[in-house]
Image (cartoon, rainbow, N blue to C red; front, side, top):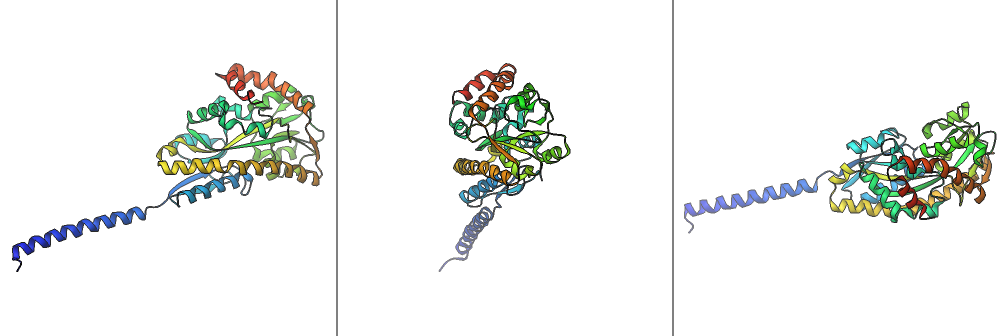
Length: 342
């Protein structure tokens, strides 16, 4: 027979055990019920633009790899931030991710102009070597030192669209009102004799329609998504020779990156790397689609020749490349690292 005192002690012990188990189960339930990490993901392009699709591929891939513990809210068409303020927003931690042209940061990080340098790289084959070579490491370091980290590399090439007359060679720009898409390209066009007007790609249609611009350099994705075939007479297409190129990355704030655990970081890096080939395959097809679409809309198509590219490259060397080498700290080393792949 259990004595009352002993029975009381047993009851207290069981009460303690049950209380501990209760709190363990409650705690486990809270962990299981923890909401996913929700990230804000911004870009400037219309929904279904290739860059918007790229953001969705990335988001879906990371969500799958993390089993839903990381989720994304994608804000297309500058719904959350205008193009240029995205950089400061990421550096401050107010924005988590963006599809972002790296050279947009050039006003505060001048070295990033290398990622929108005319005639450098020459084509997709050369561009896609950057990531794993010295020039790629230089670009990654300049980004991470300034608050953003590239998770997925996406090169985009562009052409020259114009009204009234074809612009195939540098002298063709003389007296033309041009938008060059970045300081380096503007330096080259200015040296060739063009008058420069800077503006974001979202304003190109009206500027061409109203006569503010006679010609423009931009990506083939933008030529299509902004329906510029309605306001242009000529389009230069590169294939193996591109005067205009830009590195457009899926980038994350380093403040956000620091908050992630090892598994979440791994999921993002693997997803970003895994969708690069798909993106480049799509963007190369899009270049050809642009030529076909514009031709059907009555725009005259010109494919750039090797000789024409060499003329633009020489103009670039004596203007944009020269300025970058002389005015940017370590500029010559950066140019040389990029040229080493040619």
